[in-house]
Structure formats: C-alpha cells, structure tokens
Length: 143
Image 1 (cartoon, rainbow, N blue to C red):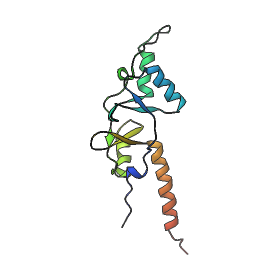
Image 2: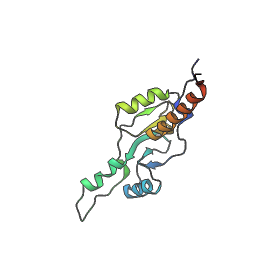
Image 3: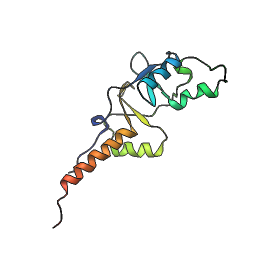
Image 4: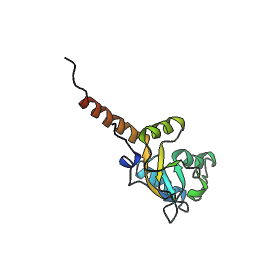
C-alpha cells in the first residue's frame, strides 16, 4: 500500500499574516523584511479575508506618479479571491492546482475558513526532493 502525502504534513504553520486595516506601506516593509512574496490577510478571528502579493503592491506604482504614490490600507490593494484548501488535501492534487493557476502559495484553512497554514511552490520542490530520496533507497540495484 502506498503512503498518502497530505498538505498538513508539509504546510508552514508559522508565516506572515497581515490585517486588512494595516497601512499598505507597513505591509510592504514586512514583506521585504521577511523576504516574502505575499502574505495572508486575516481578520480578528483568524479567518482569511485576502492575500497581499508583490503584484498587488505594484498597484502603488501603477496608480501613482513620479512625485506621489497612492497610500491606503491593505484592504484597498489585496486580492480577495483567495484559493484555500483543507489540510487533508493530497500533495499530488495540490501540485495539479499549482500547475493550473498562477499563484505561488495556497492557504490551508479549517471548515470555518480560519487559517491553519500555507504551502508554497518552493515547499513542493522540497517534497519532490524528499520523495526522490525515498524512492532511491527503496530501489535495489540490479546485478
């Protein structure tokens, strides 16, 4: 019987979250400081309300001019259509989701839409490496 690899076994449980009412420039500072390409935006109950990505932050440049950049809250720039999956999702299904969509991370939520973790495409690369190592140790050399 083959082993089932679930998202909950690989998801990142400590990650950057933002508030929708946070100043967008404070959020940009945090993304840069933590070397993150995006962050989950949550409410006071840890429910997902959006995601703020590098691409979302580029709106600061496209909506501004050389002398004046727009400002505002994270909620004015974030993407509200966030792709979320439950923790029991199979990693092979997850890889397929990444192949079909442009995003770099998927948010893991409970049935009440509270954030539990996240998983990135880079995390899947680590899983590939791990699975490859496991497969190498199981294969006996042919003599």
